[in-house]
Length: 292
Image (cartoon, rainbow, N blue to C red; front, side):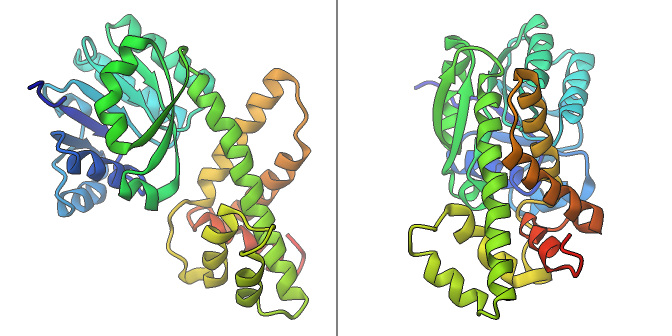
């Protein structure tokens, strides 16, 4: 019987930790890599063994990276290259960092002897905890084959191409729609409030009709919860991701006015100090007296 691949999982944040737990539940030996002491404590309490630096991850076969930004991805690659722990490993970049970043860092890893899979995820924290994410995977046939046991532990891998950056490109399209749908839900529920309707009742009624969407059903209740809403995906993530969408659109010369309107709402929420609040807090830009 073939042995399970040894996995290092870098980035044990809101979605990274449940992803790591899904891999452990699938029976794959895993060590989490998390520089923040508080993050390591949460992971250890959940039964995930951790280290602070990728240089201390030991002899692993697969490295999954779930950081927040392209700069953080670069830092992880820098540390691995400095430690001489790249050759012979398969790297799965599940962070949403954009096509350019994954191509640049993928090239560095491949030059050092690694195989690389570009596999950003969609589905959110709840689905990460169930091992039910959708992964937009791209890479060479050999790299994808080596990554399959880990991808299957995380959810459903949709192979979208054989070149690095193609997975990120699909995620850019995904995040365009996600951002627009969250802001549309916020705008509609804010309108219901201004019309002196019970927004919870409106959410229940329209959520069963043609106007329903995943984001309305998922974020709507958190919008109504206000400051009590759990932080499952921060406003700051959508500030970053809508920027990636805007950059990708500019690179190919397409105007995205609807995306830009949604981006302005996330930027306004961030300017109000809501960057670390749940992304459903974008509704506060409508509730404010000045409409922003």
